[in-house]
Image (cartoon, rainbow, N blue to C red; front, side, top):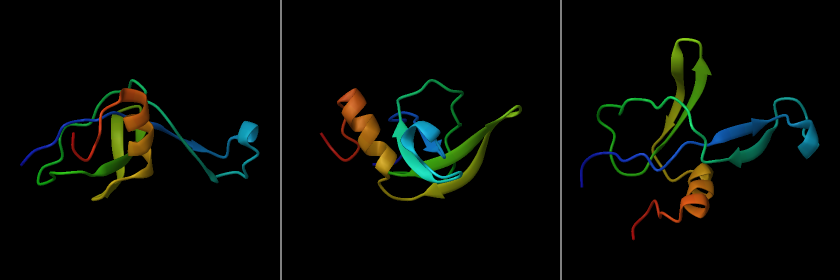
Length: 86
């Protein structure tokens, strides 16, 4: 297998008062959310996660995680689509 298919996009929750979190503390993810989508990153295939910030000029990549991420569990549950197989 070679290539990439978008499973979905989540929003990372940071420092949310309604979750009693400290400023800048990770609180979880919600999704799927609609957002401008990144173009495929060259050289990547299989399962990976990409953290990005939505700037006025569009998505700006913060980091690429070459592994199954916690956000994928949110998307699998919401969509019924498995990231790692049928």
